[in-house]
Image (cartoon, rainbow, N blue to C red; front, side):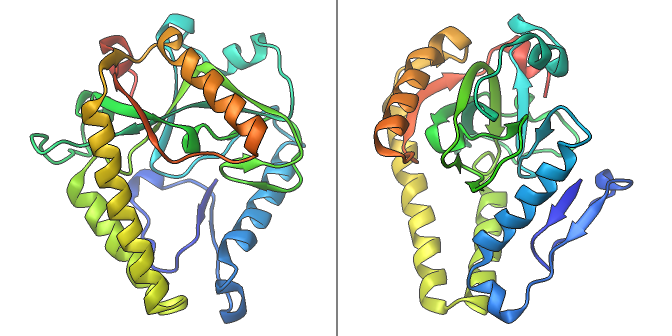
Amino acid sequence: MLILDGQSDELDEAVRGCSVIRLSLSADQRSDFDRFRMLFINRQINALLRVYKYVVHTDADEMIVLHPDRGDDLVAYLDARAHTGIALSPVGVELLFSDDDPPLDPDLPLLRQRQFGFLSEAYCKPCIIHREIGRGHMHMIRNDKWTIDKNLFLFHGKYADQEIFNSRLEDRHNTKEAHISKRHAAWDRNVARRWLNRATRRFMAAQEEPLTPEAVAPRIAEFERSRSETGKFSFEAVGRFRVPDEMRELL
């Protein structure tokens, strides 16, 4: 199922045959768009859980991979593991472009073109749901338990290509300028650019490590401890990780 939350979103040939829902917001709903969208999505997830054992909810630029050392069948892996709480989170990895990288080729596998990234606590999010949810957000389910699985990785492609990032940033800016305010749109764009600059500096200063379950386990423990103490998550870049060759063949 594909949910479009923008009236200008165009469908690519690759999604032909998918079930598509296009959200159409009235003027009074636009000011509270995120809450409206998540309420709608949560209801869709709960309806699907009446038919399916698991529901995976991601954005279009997010892809989940099971580490090859742990198998090659995601459903079989999920069936075999013990579950606590109502959802499971992969380890969030932000793929990052460098000045030397050529533009992404959509006809080639993503991980063969980008091999480095950093961990993102914000993208360790409960997107593999196996029980009905109540109040929730894409990055957090409140008042219910969920866990991070070190064997699953969610690759976020927002920063994998500089040209695409700048184009999407301008599209987001124009949408917010039209539906919210020019001041809010300008603030949002400036924050995104400053965050990327800061994340890149932290990434370049970190020591390179292989992206393996063993290497990320200590960071995951820190993420879960921080979240349990504060009820919040951080957008800060953590580490500098290289995707192993055997995983690059999967995506």
